[in-house]
Length: 362
Image (cartoon, rainbow, N blue to C red):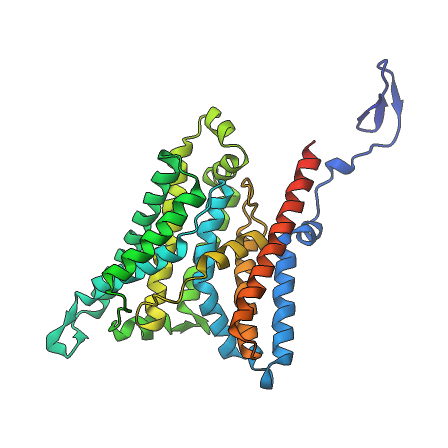
């Protein structure tokens, strides 16, 4: 056996001989190489390719217009918020299938809170529009957090499997939303909610998309630079090892589900600001879209690794596919098939990645 040292080799008897240093494993990976190996980079490239393709095949190249780009940003905003929350939870090894139901319930509760400020003297208008809007935002966030805390208690305290727990709360949350709204959408929101938030743009970027961008930057920094992000991935790698290391795993999981709930509540408020009402029947596939975005973006299903940037590009991939198929006249049921196929491919890629990581460690 020969041990490599700087500029020399040490033989089995301790003799030192001159020889070249094999330091390939010690050399830092260049930024370009790291980007080329990143799943996020490949998903981003696929997004660009699809945008070019749908622009070319769409009538009058309408897919590449500024108006459609703004529509894509709006459509991706809620998908990104839900996917970000799910990405953090998956990093710790837990699922949440109830994010869509949380969004709907939060929007219903927030809309009902806003309607309490409606002024009969103003012919159905609002004497204090911005107070009503701020209260609605607060209620949406609180409702989402409470929903997330309940999920966290079931998963972390009651030790219910996360898939089973959130599948149950998916049905309960949807049912409660319909119960509170009497089975119909809650309309009559303040005009300023749409004109000043939902449909407003800042430098041609929709205001709701700005919220998604801020959330993305904050969570990227949390995952990359904070102990919270490190602990989240450590729990996903081995919960038992994290507990032995002294991490408060149960509390950490509840914080994660609360974070996912808060993002779902924010998405519910954005839903109100976009449409001026709730959209009870418009979120059946939110969980599927979120899982697709997270997995194809590179976050591991087994936990232990989070890719925030990849999650964002994965969310855009689903939205670009759906919008492109609509604009090119493809029937709606094909959209579900395509998204399902993309999810399957993402799971296969995730499995291959996991096996390669295991082989590299062994």
